[in-house]
Amino acid sequence: MAAMADRKDELHTTGEHTSAAEPKAGTHTEVAIIGGGVAGLSAALVLGRSRKRTLVIDAGEPRNAPSPGVHSFFSRDGMLPADLLRIGREQLAPYDSVQLRRGRVSTAERVGDRFHLHLDDGGVVTTRRVVLTLGVVDELPDIEGLRERWGHGVFHCPYCHGWEMRDQPLAVLGNGAEGVRLARLATGWTRDIMLCTNGPATFGHEERALLARCGIAVHERRVARVDGEGKGVSGVVFEGGEMLPRAGVLVRPPIHQRSDLPAALGCALTEQGVIRTDEDGRTSVPGVFAVGDCASLMQQVAVAVGQATRAAIVLNNELVLEATARCASATATRN
Ligand SMILES: Cc1cc2nc3c(=O)[nH]c(=O)nc-3n(C[C@H](O)[C@H](O)[C@H](O)COP(=O)(O)OP(=O)(O)OC[C@H]3O[C@@H](n4cnc5c(N)ncnc54)[C@H](O)[C@@H]3O)c2cc1C
Image (tube, rainbow, N blue to C red; front, side, top):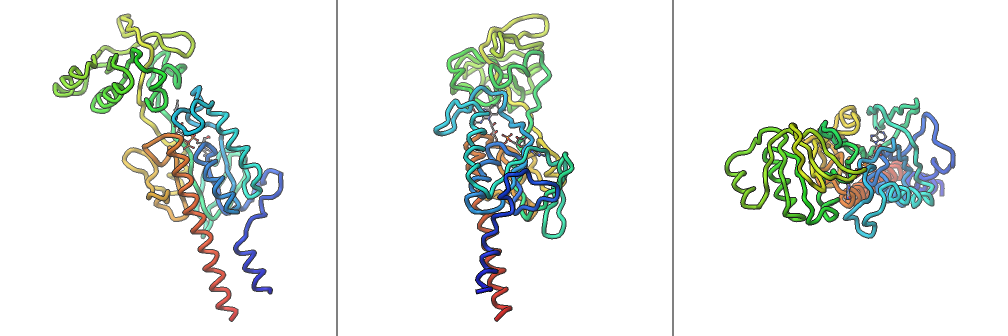
């Protein structure tokens, strides 16, 4: 009977987070998810339903916050990003295995077979597994009028905003092979495209000829500002004052990790600067998973949710199989 009770404790480890109070400094959890955007909340749902003590720590800066609507996400098309996250958090409430904590993890380290996470507020969380769902930051070009229209008239992803710009005059801001590619992709939504290279074009005759055949014009003068009413775009103004009437600007800025935690933990990055993982979200550091934008170049809500679900299942399987292995060896020792 006692052996049975031990086994139950080993296998069903929920309960440490059942208090409604915020976890205090020195919290121990089985899984800590750092980042409470769509990826983090999705992973928490699967892990919570799997009865894993799960703590989500979130600084509250999701990448798509400026956007008026999440598009291309099945059953939620056009929903305000903040509403999507609010519903996600509400649907975690019935699971006493999950706790949400507002805060920022400033650094993290492995200590033995645990990870210690240090929060800005002085709190320390120890955990057996870490899921990084940190997101990324867009490095917007320093052009007057661009930042305040980001996510509205100025956008980076035709799958997110292209439909709203269909058949409209569009400026694609980019240069080199990437700029040419982006302009070509944009033809799927509109044929009225001006590729603004913001300085001399860095692509050759072949690309120029290809663009011309696709009906894409090229403008090489430096862009002085983006004009428009409110968050909308009415045109691009070049140095010298020439104004090109446009309804939108498509630009694909470089990105960087939102947090130094991947480096602190020793996670390898890809050449493109996202966390290197296998197809199940395992990073180069055993016990640390990473999913969503911080670990993928296909940066979409649906993709982040799918990756998070997959990683959470794999992680839970690992923990349960480890626990059953410990039970088996404990039983063998007793016998
Ligand atoms: C303007 C814009 C519009 C977009 N529109 C769409 C769209 O219509 N459809 C679509 O599918 N995709 C869209 N995207 C892409 C979408 O935003 C991302 O794919 C999605 O947000 C990725 O989710 P995530 O959970 O990986 O990261 P995020 O949503 O960025 O969430 C990461 C969270 O981690 C937190 N965090 C980071 N570091 C720490 C730390 N050290 N401690 C604690 N918390 C931390 C952040 O504060 C943030 O809350 C858009 C992106 C942008 C920029």
